[in-house]
Image (cartoon, rainbow, N blue to C red; front, side, top):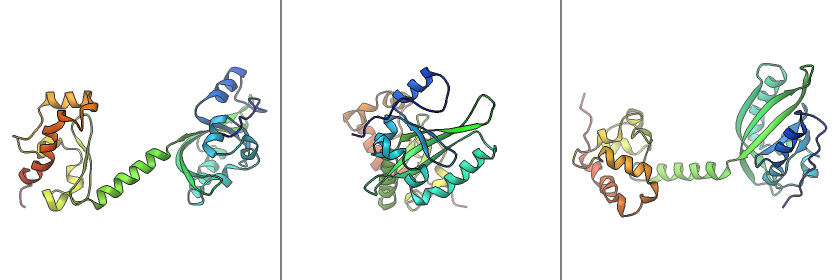
Length: 231
């Protein structure tokens, strides 16, 4: 496990209480110079990078950023330094010591001194590697599936549909997004409002006997869906 950095920071933000909160935060946090050098880092960020504090503070964020993501980050930093914005958010990849990459949701804010002049950047990184990889696996699954997949919000409306839906139902994915899922189901197979509300409130029952009706819907609504009218 990477060693913990010192809680002492040569620059703000301000109070000792604030610095202690940043040091103890589970979110990776750093104070960064305008040129990219790390002025201070907390333990969570060192753990994310897989490096001890001394190694992180001897390099720059540019060196730890995946080359394919460097350009957009440099542009956003330039806008911060130029006064065009006060902060920005960016999902990007960072390089680990073994050359592998991890994904982070980065938030960067401009920190000013008492006179209002630029002092440093406050950067915070949340590890979203698992989320990104899961989304990629889901995308690949949906692209290769013979059947179509949908994602529906708690309001029952379709928010995403995979490509194979058109040859099966006759609608394009764009036509289906935003409509209520029950509107494309045969009336005999549609959930009641009470059943939907129950499953939304008890997601642990999905995949058990409680959703057998849902399983029947998945196999039957393809054959009995209301097809769009011909032009």
